[in-house]
Length: 125
Image 1 (cartoon, rainbow, N blue to C red):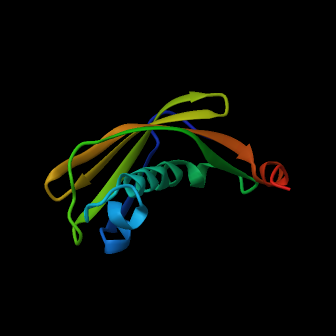
Image 2: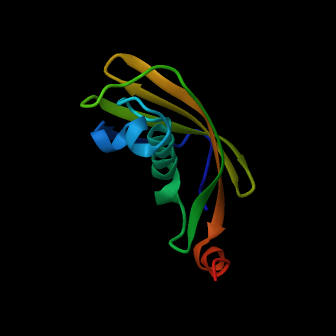
């Protein structure tokens, strides 16, 4: 496994009505919901490391801390960036941030753990 500090990933989307706080059940406003920002940030973390893992492995999220700093309107383009900040055995800590056309929307940290896919899935049954 060739995971090293500094690996980067990104994810992009356009905000749709399905991405709003109202649609996601996290509020009553029609702007980008915090759960969708978190999902986009996690997608960016996966993008950073997926090509560096063996096919038998994946990562799973274990901790998320994201500050949602300002609203983003439906129709806006949004992107998330993740940088692998720390590698401690199987534990990976990323710095994440999300931006729209006006600037920074959210920032925080995401922790993921490398797991053997088959072994992990066997715990579900």
